[in-house]
Image (tube, rainbow, N blue to C red; front, top):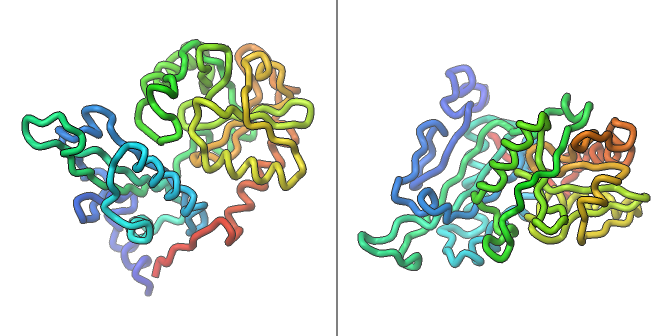
Amino acid sequence: MSQIETITENHNPFADGIAYADGDYMPVAEARIPISDWGFLHSDVTYDVVAVWGGGFFRLADHLDRFFRGIGKLHMQAPFERDEMAAILAECVCRTGLREAYVRVILTRGTPPPGSRDPRACENRFYAVAIPYVWIASPEKQEQGLHLTVSSIPRIAPESVDPTVKNFHWGDMVQGLFEAFERGREMPVLTDGKGNITEGPGFNLFASSGGRLITPANGVLMGITRMTVIELAQSLNVRVDVGTLTEHELRHADEIFLSSTAGGVMPVTRLDDALVGDGSPGPLTQRLRQMYWDAHDDDKYVTRIDYG
């Protein structure tokens, strides 16, 4: 009998999720951060999320690249090298036994010495979390398509908070979600306050118009799923413009879809009071959605986990 089978029979304490903190692994519900940590007090933190599907990390190297870039931009210091960090993430997943997981890696500013307000004096703190896979929209909901709204809440200006550093500054996103719910919609997408589309809570956005794809270049996270979609579309000889997408262009698009680690390629079939196209997921969206999930079996993208 394998170790994983034995743990399962005896009730795996990590089945609902695991956290790594202060050099130890613990059930996710028991994980804590100090209340004085600036990651909590100031949202002075960066993180990344990589998916595990079918027992393998999807584009782990790309996620770690982005994580380390964010650490550098925030003047933080990673306590582990890349290979050590990857090993911790794999150990987290292995201990849960999960074959489909949502794995978060986090670095907070930490706590300064008493009386200090100097961020340079903080000792940065590393955390990792693995939980069952998270969907922004379930596969069943994706078959129908999402109902999107263009929020009146502007995205935080990139000159103030760099959106290419994955962060927890979600005040604008949370307001946008409440506004969407109040309007009877499911998801908001925010503008830059000047009529240009940016992103939504946890996702990038694509619009298809006249056979070409457009995705915003500014005020957005450079999503790994977004990058994958661009590569897949280009393999189909579909023109992809990474640039400005106006609200007017979005409202006249043939197809709209969202992209995220938490759900992949997700069709949008209603935008406020109007149908997108004929009100069903469009053919290009469906093709890219299938190609995206097929890529999870491609060793070019996947880092297999040893559960043994």
